[in-house]
Image 1 (cartoon, one colour):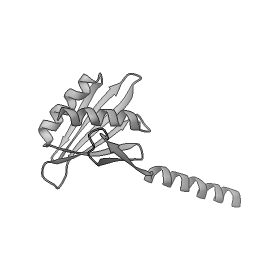
Image 2: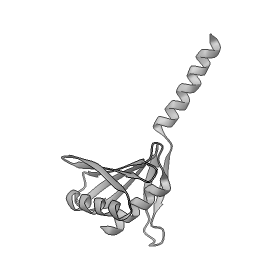
Image 3: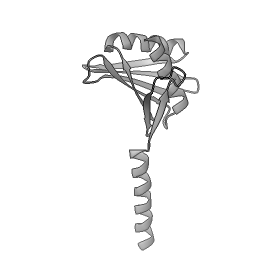
Image 4: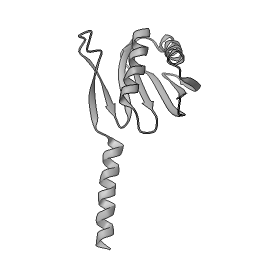
Amino acid sequence: MKFTKQLHLVLFGIATLFISGCETQVAIDPISGVEQTARYQAGFFFGVIEGELDPAFRTTIQTLDEQGYFRTGERHVETAVSIFARKIGDEKIVVRLKQTPEAGELEVRIRVGNMGNLAESQTIFAAIREAL
């Protein structure tokens, strides 16, 4: 009985770490010398770009199409839009653009697959940022 209680505590601790995730600061465009960073937490890539929601949305879907992803849908709310796509191997990709309180800034959240993929998320973000 005591062993199962300890096992539950260990599993709960692991689940808590996985859900909260470690936050990793990720350099964006180190070639240009701009000291901007994004963060990667629990499989999600978070970055900030300058722009307005509607033009950024159109640019994002065009960028995803150019990179060979198959868009499957989108969800619009007042201050955000989520774009759903698939890649070869039927991995799900979700890109969410959300207006921040600062005028002219958008938070971009990218998730590739079920567990996340930092390298591919960075590639998608860089392509969107460059297109804007």
